[in-house]
Length: 112
Image (cartoon, rainbow, N blue to C red; front, top):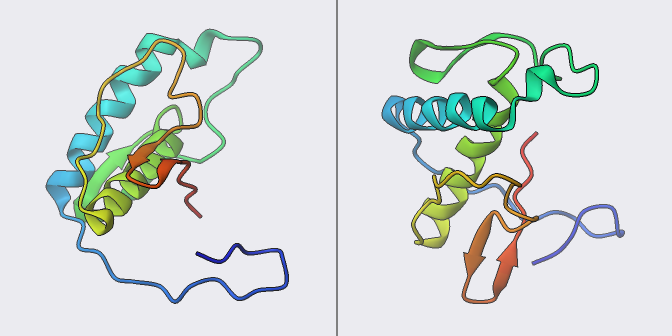
């Protein structure tokens, strides 16, 4: 796979179907994750970097979880593309930069 920012073109986009149910699962994960890590109470945190928004399927996400939901939906899409299960387990200290464990090794997923 080619990397952006190194003089090469990124791979062509591949459509992946995401359902409203996928978004709802990711919202549930994000709410549990935010509670576990207490983002809103740490070091001057005043809400998320991503504003409140209505996501696919009419799912509402406030600013404390919208960024987490978007990132998890990207992971679900990548898992679907790679044919591996999505990890919705909560970890106290995060995933350590290992969003997916693919046969080729751990992978970090970035959403834009």
